[in-house]
Image 1 (cartoon, rainbow, N blue to C red):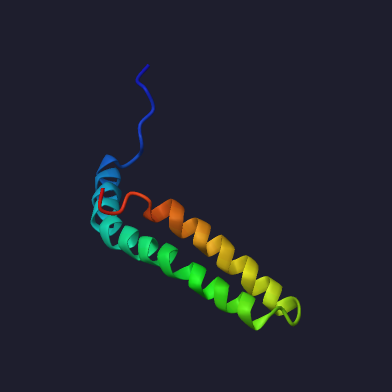
Image 2 (cartoon, one colour):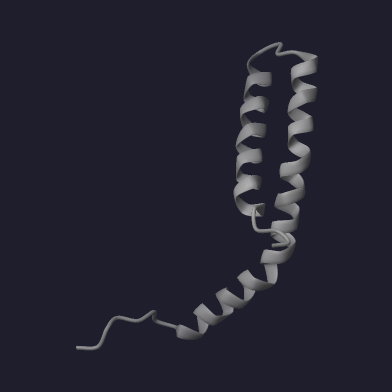
Length: 77
């Protein structure tokens, strides 16, 4: 019995080429976002937390910063 393969092997090539085409700009955007998002966090700390919306924004910024670090860690290596 033959090993199972993806139904359309040409689709794999398209996905790989799209990933390699988009990885450069995506990594650059993620890297620079990881650099500048902490300044947004500092601004939020300076203004203070007034309510639940500020806590949500803080959490969203931390999650976005972690995601940006993970995606952009290979930029220019």
